[in-house]
Image (cartoon, rainbow, N blue to C red; front, side, top):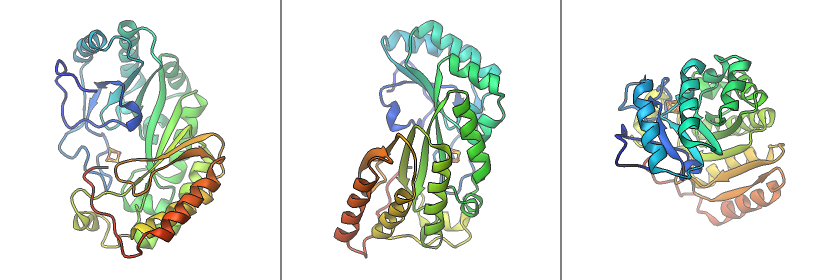
Length: 295
Ligand code: SF4
């Protein structure tokens, strides 16, 4: 949702699940901004925005979006803000909007780990109920290569700390992230990490290279070899086959995906694997994904 009365600092990204949410840019850009595959915020220098500006935008949003149920705090990882900064923003949102279903934002595991348990609980009580976390892979070797700034263990610790405070998570994994060489370990370690954290939502996106393969190669030490669509399906199949989770709502319906998959895991695992087997059989082995525009 975009409003002409709000002077958004473009580009603005939000998860598909926030299509009906009012968007408040609590921060601009991404405080990390170093992941090898990501160009989302390369045009922006990270900064937090002043509370006075946010207060006035919250008032404008509340007037224009009467009855809105959800607020998404942009940009890349608004949850990097300290609890001291987030609490007044949430209070102001609650004052102006009244009853909301939830407030959410993107977060990195380190953004969760720097907050105390009681701060996280307080944020949850004020309505911050969901964090979107692009963990991308559970494989430490690949996390290092893509310069994620997180490890398997830091990710598990961050996600579980949020869960312990009652904050749900929506986790993203990138199909094809490591190319041919790292495909199997990426799939297996990614299912292992998801099994450990059992998020409320899980989605898989497919690696997109908006600036082309050469650009990624430079940052990937030349080791990246693009996978065919069939190889991407096979990687996804290994990932799903090895998941052992309860009541995880799974979606693979991003613009970057070559096959739409939806289900609840592990209940729908057999059906998802059947769909993948069928797609593997019916897709030419020589077919490679075209380069979609954005992640
Ligand atoms: S993937 Fe997320 S954490 Fe990494 S640079 Fe992009 S927005 Fe920042």
